[in-house]
Image (cartoon, rainbow, N blue to C red; front, side):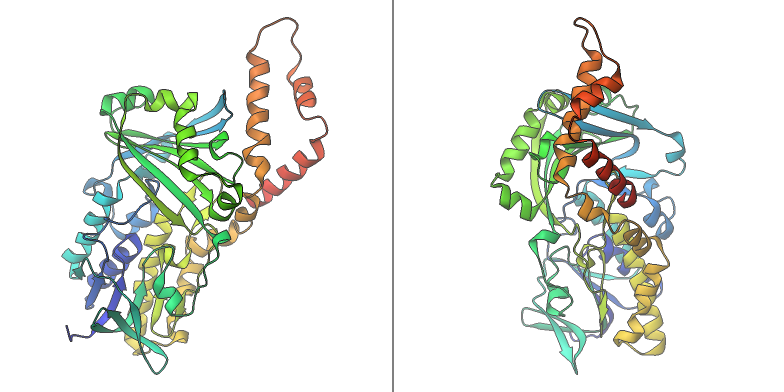
Length: 421
């Protein structure tokens, strides 16, 4: 292939497809390459997508996209070995328009990439990109095996451990900046899911778990409801998982056997297991001469403790990258200064604004007391409230007794949490 493209996009995940779709709609000559046999074949996420970013690009996308369920119930569960406390939130204002959906990437990514193809982009799957193509210290294309493909701009959308960002000198990888997510898909009938999670037809639930499920390792667990399956998984920081000497499969096994979880997944069939790396606090350089970095490859993710925003940021960054490429093509200038318009767009959108707002959250969320002391404390207090066995104490007195010698630390953590989250 000797043709020169306006843009080559490495990776056909949400960020890559958003960039390809946007550029193709503008009339540019776009090539999107994907190392999987098809888009979504190698892409993994927990299974929830906030709708805001994609709805700007494709209004009412849920009417045609293969979404699973619209999330109508938000649950946060504090978990100990034998008990749990759950906060259950519902808000009809989150439904018009829909706030978020559960999805399965193998289906969703194929749909999104095909939208880009329909708009005029070229998609080549099953291609491994080995290197960047350089000329006069500027990226001018990609190297895939013996093939050299040229473009005015390359957009790196190749995931959390981005080879393209590393080759461009924009990223060095440190284990402490990443988390690992482990996930099972457990198959059920749709009626079983609706009964167990108290849902109407097509409604979905997102339930997060903090506490015993990670054995005091910073992180958490989740269950998302799909049409006929549950996406269940655990996310923990890689470096602390290594230091704990706990095997990853042990976390999954014990989480599944916890009484609060076991009854939710009883009778289900595990049909898929996967794992992936999450750039929890791993920010990559966003651009250099001839190259833009988007989505997970750029570390564009925010974990505010309750909401984990990644896929929507990936889509928004793909859209911003396309706009920056359009301006660069108009000026015929693909050097760093010209492409810095991409960062300007992200700063004036929610992506870098939210990352700045929650910049303290990664450090705060590595506080081990969040996963040991506080879930246990909540469960013990509710146990004492529920138990009728002789004279009872007031809740305040129960709290004083359970927090003896810990009050100053609790106050400090509360202040830090309010500032961070």
